[in-house]
Structures are given as C-alpha cells and as structure tokens.
Length: 248
Image (cartoon, rainbow, N blue to C red; front, top):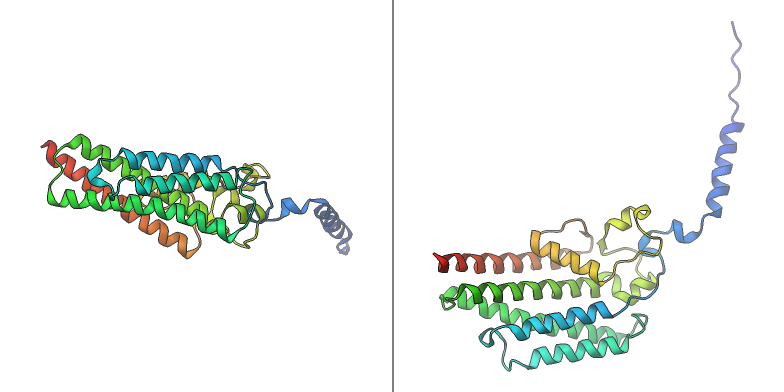
C-alpha cells in the first residue's frame, strides 16, 4: 500500500504570492470603481444646443399654449444658457454655488415654460377646443420633446452633484447606474456619463414609461423618473386619443 504523502502547500502559497505581487503593480485608477475615477471636464456645448433646441420648440408653439408674455420665459432660458456656457467655456471644472444656482434656475425656467404649455394643452383637450389634428399632434410632439430635454437636464445636473463634481469623483456612490459602470471592460478607461447619456436616459424613460438600461439608485432619481413617466404618459394618451377622435 502506498504511503500517504503530505500535501505540498508551497505551490498554492507561491500562486497566492504571485497574484498579490501582480495586483500591487496594477494602477489604482483601474482598481477603483468607474464612478470614483477622476476624468477630464465635460464640454458645455451639448448642453447649450439642448437649451437652444428647447427654446426653439417653445417659440414654435401656438401663442395660445404659451405662458404670457410669450417672449419672457424663452428669452430668459436662452440668456441663462448662454451665460452658463460662457462661464464654463473651457468645460465644467469649477464647483461654485453660484454656478450651481444658475444651472438650476436655467432648468427651472425651461421646466416652468413647458409645464405651462402642457397644462394649457391638456385644458384645451379636456374642453374639446382643439379641432385641428395636425396642430394638435405637432404641439403635443413639441411639448413631449421639450419634456425629454428638460428631464435630461435635471438628471445631468443632479447626478453625483453635477458635471464638475462627477469629473472630480467627489461622491462615493452613483445616483444613476450606467451599464459601463458594471462592465468597465466594455468601455474606455476614462469613460464618464455626459449630457447625451442623460438625454438618452430621459428619452427612454419618456418612451417606455420606466427605466431601461440605466438604473436609478438614489431616491430623487426614482421619484424624478416616476414623475416623468406620469407626465409623458398623460400627454401622449390625451393627445393621441383626441387626435383619433377628431379624425373619426
């Protein structure tokens, strides 16, 4: 009968020591979670284009669906967007309470203008005043697109403290979990969510009435997505139902 030989643990111990030695040579930036990596600042031009698009959509609405005076809110939105872009023309790098207040005022102005237009449209639909299906569909589509831009700006401005705080990785946890955060091997090492990513989040939430591939982790994100889904669903249902009724 063969004698039992003691297990040679030197091989296992040696493998562990090699793994520890290799892990010590890996850069810390690759070990940190994606949301804890310091990245370059975000360009402001995508946000400026979104502000101009929302302003143009608001101006294109029929006067009866705008909050009087019709020129006030679109003008304020354009001026605030231009001022914010000039102040951050080299990128969102400064963490300033004043700039944060300006950005929130900008989004609030656009939100107020679009909420007023949506309210007037819904009131007209409930009273049966709108009889032109083309005008109805174009107006409803413009309000829906503006709603997508507005909520995209809210997600972009609130997630992890805003663009400047995100680039410096100041928050320990993400508010919105993007797929690239859970599968970093599928994206560049310096990847970070930018405005177009948040615009996509807003569009899919408005179209599907629920989150899709980006998961809300913070309570404010969950509540914001819930409100956006309710607004989008009510707008689309009323506009489409009224348009079908007129065409019949």
